[in-house]
Length: 337
Image (tube, rainbow, N blue to C red):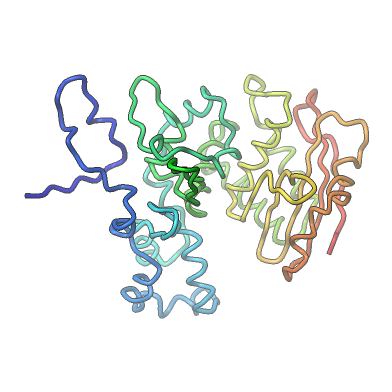
């Protein structure tokens, strides 16, 4: 009577002739939104036995532990209202009892990376991308849309739904820390021509430690030598967007909350990075003749105001890039709170 199919996309059912195409796609139907995956309520109800020893292991309260698990492995939404866990990652976490990037172990398609390059889509633009409802499950072998493919493969998910008369639109974004890290790390492999283990050893681990310790000299030493200094000349672009993309990928990869193009009532912040204790505000300029112009912009446009209510120290950084050197020329900082 009934048959239920799951998979990544509908590309396989396309045919000029009659084929397996009389199917009812329930992927984005609200009443089925939590059918595949586990909700937060189900995690608490069915996995309590697996959770009981973990707060002591990680030296966290149970409340903060649940929040951390959710940030890493939840976030997949099929209606832009409710979200579910990736069960594979969740179960692996309970087996290993460590926060690990299980998504990366399943592999990342080289085709997606190539499509991003071909269609000239910057990674920081993927967060907040808006798409029409009918484009999300687009299945066109001849004209592949990389954003719809990223949605179908789980790298992007629904964040917000909105209507304009009869038209339904969705805002997309990365579902969680795990997926954002995996995708960013795979792109960094392409940009720097380094292996995953070298990126982890030479960039991710020391940069994460330096960010937590407010070691600003070390942060910029890593960025200059191990990140921008390793990008091959042939993929260099003199535009600010190039430097911004590399920067955004780097901080996505190390696991901290990273947002780009954050708007306030005066302007738009290039990048915000938030650790457990600190907030870093970054503004970029390329080939500027005024050394502290980027730092002054942060203060003049009051970029830090929206974060003053948080119990965290706030630091502003103005970074000047050189298109000739293809690297950071100089940087300036000031503590704002």
